[in-house]
Image (cartoon, rainbow, N blue to C red; front, top):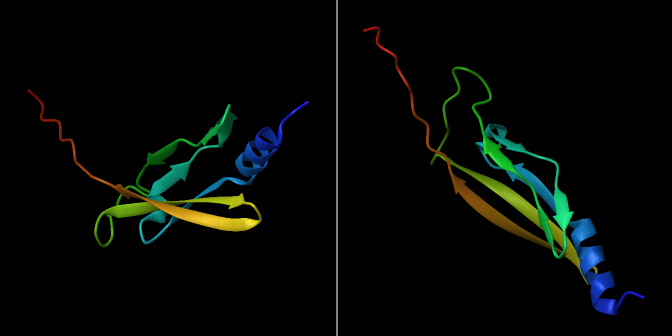
Length: 92
């Protein structure tokens, strides 16, 4: 028999979503969420949306993490700094 706490955690984890937001949102690729125990995670990778893409504004992107807790929707923002670099190979 599960406890009320277990039911609450299960319900909260089931409601958690991850979404990219902001001017550089197209740089973020969010993997499928997975839950384990009392945690739910998603892999977030930064990747240029095209070969000639450049970061806009302040080189940051945001992941919105949303959950429903006791029938109240709660959203938190995780700000990520994106750094770009270029690698050039010179023949020897």
